[in-house]
Amino acid sequence: MKGLILAAGLGTRLRPITSLRPKPIIDVANRPLIHYAVDNLLEVGVRDIGVVVSPDTRDDLKRTLATYEDRASFTFVVQDPPEGLAHAVKVARDFLAEDPFVMYLSDNLFEHGIAPFVEAFDPDAGVAAALALVPVDDPRAFGVAELDGERVVRLVEKPADPPSNLAVAGVYVFDASVHEAIADLPRGAKDEFQITDAIQRMIQDGRRVVAGTVDGWWKDTGTPEDILDANRLVLSRSVRRIDGAVENAEIVGDVVVEEGAVVRNATIFGPALIAAGCRVEDAYVGPFTTLGADVTIRDAEIEYAVVGPGSSIHHLASRVQGSLVGAEVEITRAGRRPRAHRLVVGDKSRLVLDTD
Ligand code: G1P
Image (tube, rainbow, N blue to C red; front, side, top):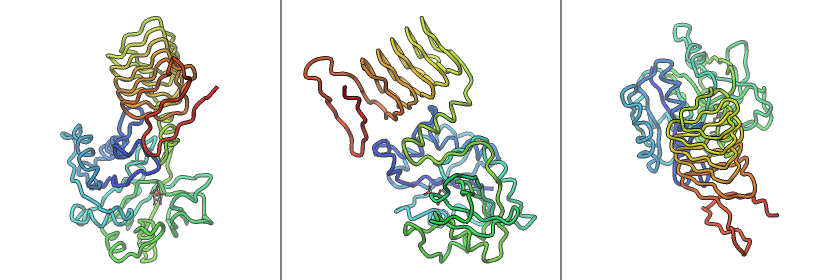
C-alpha cells in the first residue's frame, strides 16, 4: 500500500506564521506536523509515500522530510494551483498507479494513529474505501457521513443541515476505483474538486465504503487556536524528563527539559517542553507550553503557548498566555519613557496587548 500526504494548502488562517513556512512544518510539541503523519504511515507499514506540495513549499518540505531518508521513500508531486483534495489525487495519479493508498491530510493529528482505518480497508471483503469518522458537536465545518452499520451510505461536504454528527477525519484508504470517480467530477463546495463528492459517487456506483471510529482525540489544525490545542493534547502525553541543567528551580509534573537547555531561578508547571539550547531564567513557564530550540525566557512569565526556535521573551510586566509565537521573534518591554508599544509586526498578525 502507498501513502499520499496532502501538503499543498496555503494555511491562510495561520498567517503570518504560514507566510514564511508551509503549515505542515509548523511545530507541535517541537515536531513538524507532517512528521506525525509520516510516523503514523510508517506504523502501519506504508513506506512509499507521495507528498503533494505547492511550488513554493516543495523545498521546505523536502528538507523537513530528509530525516526519514532511511525509513521511507518520498515522491514529491506539485499541485498548482491547489484545487481541492480530489484534484490532489488526480495530479498524483502517475505515482499512485493502480495501487491502494492511504490519503492523509497533513494538518490532521490522531492520538492513537491510523491502524483501525487501514485495517477496515479489506479488499477481500469488497471494500473500496475506508474512512475515519469522529463524533463532533458541530459537524458543519467537515465532511459528514451517514451510516448503515459500518457501511457509509451518504457523504456530504460541509452541510448546513448535517445528516449526523459524524465528521470525516483526514485519513482515507482507497482502491484504484477512486480514480474513476474523480475523472470527470464537477467542482463542489468552495468551487474545489471535493474528495467527499468522489466518495459519494463511489457509493452511488455501488462500491462498498466503510468507516472506523476515531479512538482518542483527533485534531484538525487550521487556526492558531487549533495549534495551541494540538500542542496541549500532545504534551498531555509527555513524560517527565530532565536532561538539561537545572538550578534553583521548582519543576512540577511532566516537564521535559532537553539536554543543552538551562533553567535557573524559575518555576515550571507541566506539561511543558523546553527544547535544547533554551535559557529560562527568573521566569515562570506554565502548563501546555512548548519552547522550541534556543528560546530565551528571562524575567518573564508564559503559559499555554508555543514559541518558535530562536525567539526571546524578556523583561515583561504581564504574562504571555494563549500565544503562538513564530521563530526568531523578540518580545520585550521598552523600559523607558515614553510608555508606548513599538511594533514591527508582519501582515495578518494579531496582537492583544495588556495596556494598563
Ligand atoms: C477537509 C475535507 C473534510 C474533512 C476535513 C478533515 O476539509 O474536505 O471533508 O472533514 O478536511 O480535516 P478542510 O479542513 O480542508 O476544510
